[in-house]
Amino acid sequence: MKKWGNRLITVVGVLLILTAIYLFAKPHIDQYFTAKDNENKIENYDKETSKHKESKAEIPKDKSKMAGYLSVPDAKIKTPVYPGPATPEQLDRGVSFAEADESLDDQNISIAGHTYTGSSDYQFSNLPEAKKGSKVYFKVAGEQRKYKITKIYDVKPEDVKVLDEQPSNKKQLTLITCDNYNAQTGKWEDRKIFVAQEVA
Image (cartoon, rainbow, N blue to C red):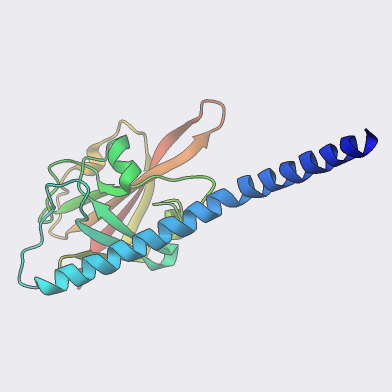
């Protein structure tokens, strides 16, 4: 009887250790597969758009299709961008245009992405690594648009003026993610804004 009791304790102990390892490794495994999936999507997007070089860059009506992809080398971000609006459902798919009626010809193109405290690879989680002067690249169809971050600041979630066209002759990207997580309420209190102006 004692032998069975000892074996049971050993089996339970091993199962608890394996469960702990799995729970610790799961976010890293998920990140790896998400990163691989994004790489494949970007590669396929480049192949597809290279076949239609003369096509005008447009945001697809199908919300599951990529509109392009965004690269922020200083933050180690390279991610597909999907049509808006940036609803919870659409953000589950990935980084998205903030508004439904966003146009690639707008002076101010707003793109939103999640921040996740347990991962630096998820959507815009690592965006705070970018600084003023950091380069941002936005590939749409066969066109690579280049930007430089000129402003970084926080706004409250209800402050949507950041989405508006700006009184400027320079085109810009406005990248939006969450900031200042409140563990007591379980909510992000602010939105961190990265303004990147187009450069030649």
